[in-house]
Length: 298
Image (tube, rainbow, N blue to C red; front, side, top):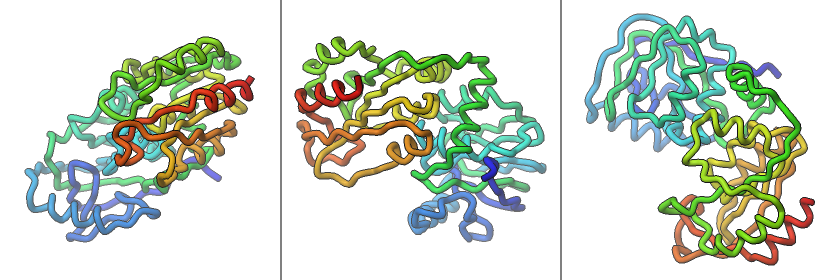
């Protein structure tokens, strides 16, 4: 299967700041997902079409790759950047929200665009001519596409691929939500098995590539930091810490499978905010079970 993606070219189109497109008040399919109901996206786009401030973008060869969720690291890496595959970026003016996260602009700096048009915050646009690569199915991946994104960055930054040796545990102790409440109890075990404790929020995009391209075992609570498995070698290992008795979002398991990375999920008790959804809930790790899993990784 070719790594490149299909796209739509549309004239006189309206786009929300979050990347949903309307043509004559009808949803442009390339701007949403085939595997996610478009009802919410459509309602949101119609509301924004009449409620939010707007600018006009004239000229041809304007390009949009962001989607409604891609201000998040995982969606940006696995959905938006995938949409650039097969695109001759030098021919296009990229449209991107001005207030997008730093990691988005760090990644975009590795591509050559004709220009970059920054949408003011909370502002939509009428675009004279727009190319929209189709979103991939959210939460599902193609190995060739993931590897093409990885290869782009390794090549751009001239990172030499070496045998994976490091063991990394992602901490969220400084985050406001989705933390491991008894993390202090894990520290002696992590030290015993030679793990380095990393706060990924403190790393630049380049630092993350360098770190995870040499990672042998990655442990993290469910969240975007696991997206960095895209830079790991085949036959390495991921342990995802996940809330018990909750809907299982298998996105990282599927991603690991595509990349030929061994995957284990440890279901954990809830912390103080037990009724919170998975992407907010704190966890309490069964220390004995955690250590037993690490023993099996040896």
